[in-house]
Length: 350
Image (tube, rainbow, N blue to C red; front, side, top):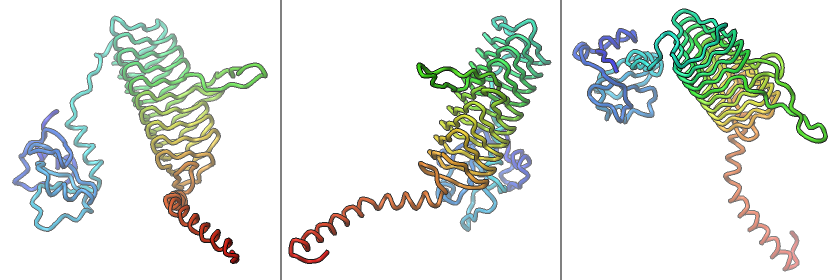
């Protein structure tokens, strides 16, 4: 990593630093519990105040709204959003990601009819298909496969072994991590009386600008039309996006989530890890689902759901609380049954 002084970091974040600490050098970022005398750390929640008081960090980025104990002698960098501030520092300190040099590696196979923009880097064993276009400064790491008639915008980065099948469109500044696959056939079959007949999947996939896809993300092509991922959306590792799904702008989809065919996510939807969404469900703008939700019905804009099946979050919590009481209730019912039985044996009335 590079090194920065606290004065440089404070200037970057638009905050102040005590003069006696301004020249201290920061070489790394670490958690409060792990930080040493040349590390920067951060505090975004009062839940970690004890760790803050015990830390050996050279300085701590602190969310301005947090009330620190009186007499605190730590070097504090006050900011409105500690997580965003930390991201800026990490970006400045981060070592460069190894990338192939601009140009075409001798082992790459690039079709004569492909068009590569200025400064494109094509790494070892990359394949670029016929009539495909790669925008300026885009980086294709080792083993990337680009099919025929693909369009990739400027300043994109595709990490090793990404597969982009034929007729896919990718916008500008898109990042796709290792081993993701775009454009496999949608999972479409129909029983014809003898076997599962395959339904041709002749559509495409459109990835809009500023999308980031994690590793091993699979986005199936549409039966017809397009499977679409809206601008600014971020998708975690191991996510399955079925055919004809439409994901709006600035959504967050966490790992191991599965979206069945023709699901619609409007803008700024958040899906927790291992969420499952049934086909043809519409999830409204700004809605959110807790991890492991099983969504079988439409979700209203701004709603929070959880559970299996997914219900409004408060209702789901009440049901879970009731389920935890079930063993005690069973014991009580059995005790009452025994009392009733004894009354009946004595000729009493229940």
